[in-house]
Amino acid sequence: MATIGYIRVSTDKQTTDNQKLAILSHVNDHLGGRVDDWIQVQASTRKSEQKRRLDDLKASLKTGDTLVVAELSRLARSVGQIAVLVDGLVSRGIRVVCIKEGMVLNGKRDMKATVMLTMFSLFAEIERDLVSERTKEGLKRARAEGKLLGRPKGTTSSKLDGKEEEIQGYLRKGVNVANVARIYGVSWSTMKHFVSSRGLNASL
Image 1 (tube, rainbow, N blue to C red):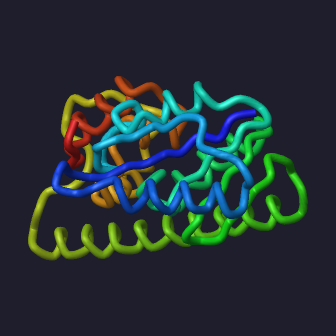
Image 2: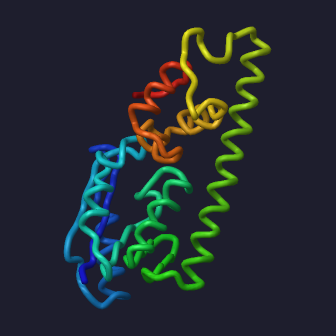
């Protein structure tokens, strides 16, 4: 059973020292062991999971291992993304420790984990509602200003039709196309085409 420390900074002007020290101190004081391996990343949460090395992190963790992060925001940008990631790890029997939040999930579906993940899901739903509300307000303003909205002529139908406002909301919030595709259970290419053909704004 290994203990893995995950550290992420957004730019090369930020240092990993504070996160590393916090993780080392916590592991020494509370987990009675040492950090067996580190994953250190320089990437914004706007970047894909691959660039943030979350794929490497998930692949390196095995049942019984412990993941330690200085704070939840190091893992993802939104509550929804954090909920999906943490739920997946706990389901695999991986212990998750977030120092700043004082959160310890022991890699099993006990009452504490269930309550925590339920709260994550609730906050994620509130977050989506807020994004949707802001998106609707933005569309209302756009219509009032006479801007053309809706599907461009010549576009084909998609199972994502009707979800334009939600998807636009995620994109405006900084969720990249790959993660939006995961949320809706479609491929990256499908989401990229939908975003492009519907005139949604995103950094592809």
